[in-house]
Length: 174
Image (tube, rainbow, N blue to C red; front, side, top):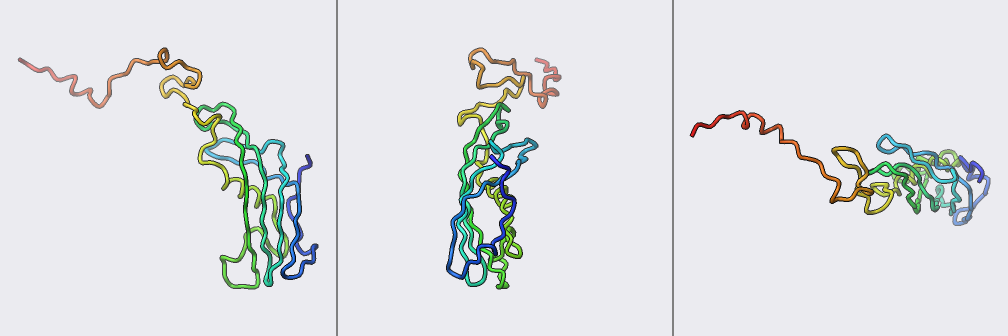
């Protein structure tokens, strides 16, 4: 798959207010860094459907795509493959003073598609990227994967709580 579009010149469509276009474009959302770990879209680029509408004072844009994000599981560090559906919308009414109607991705009729796809993907991700929904993580004592360990065999002797150390030093006369 090609690297994809980084930006789209919206003025080239010469849309009148009320007109719209549907486009399918390859876009590379780039890598994400979460919790010090790197995550990447499988295949680098995704095919995004872009619905573009011209309004009286600017543009309304909708972007949809599906992606598989690969990287380490946030619990056990094994490989994780997370399917993500993105459905993002932006409105840019540059002729108004309302900041809520100004898109950070559209400037001078230029849509920064790759930056928008990156941010929309980050917002669509689940809170935790896991190798599987029931991932048990790593043992806090030895670091072994609890997904592979038999709970009956994976045990550690509990060290005494250091907060009680001074009490153990007490000699009680009876």
